[in-house]
Image (cartoon, rainbow, N blue to C red; front, side):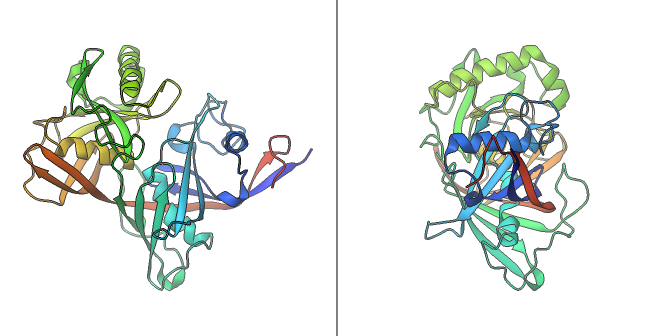
Length: 363
């Protein structure tokens, strides 16, 4: 049996990378879709040697685009996190770094007409319901990838992609604080369970006996910490109404500690079974909300800002990520409205990706 060709763009979005495809070119059934994505990525091997994955969670992500039926949006963005080795596909989360490539990809695919100098693409994130506006440089109606913007964790410079995230509170659980508490004790560790852009379990690094400045490799190799963190995450996930999360990438886990280089705080973000080499865009919003909200585990790390919006620089293992947050804080009352970030993207390849015909014979 031959192979099935599927059109794709291969792109870097922020500090992640993966195939971007038209949803219409893929199976409608999610079980069949999962099998196709496993074959595309090459899941089941540590190097993804039989697919286009890169052997790391940040390089086994897939973006699927389609015209939106939402009156507000131009395109729908459906995300899949494919595991490196375990042959799992998780459709529950979204990815803000990969989202940085959605605007350029939508123009490249012809889903959105390019403007003469800049194109605003309104994106509905199908997985969570979030609404995002991406501003893409399109001089002469062509996507511009070259520029002077630096993203820590990505070599060189590129054209900026401005992202404005809205409707991100409670996307997975329906509530800012899914357990009804701003802080609680799980497995002997004080945590905050929040749902802003990504449901997260957030703790202080020192409660695990860590400084918070450890490298991702040091954290990944700390088997005692990783096992304890996972036990906390699983129990917290159940409290958040997410059920058994032992085989799900949500909720994600985050550690906070004092800033060391002039930022708002030092952060470490887990995907969740390994430490992110930098920081997820979605996770940065949830961590920012935690830092801004009274009564969370972040209380005291950041002086309460007296006006909105506020710019927060989060220190991650390879530099900083800046989040401009709009919020309302009145005594103990707190509302989180939106977050703005600047990322970059680059088209790496285009053409067809192939899957074995016995996996899928095509539409």
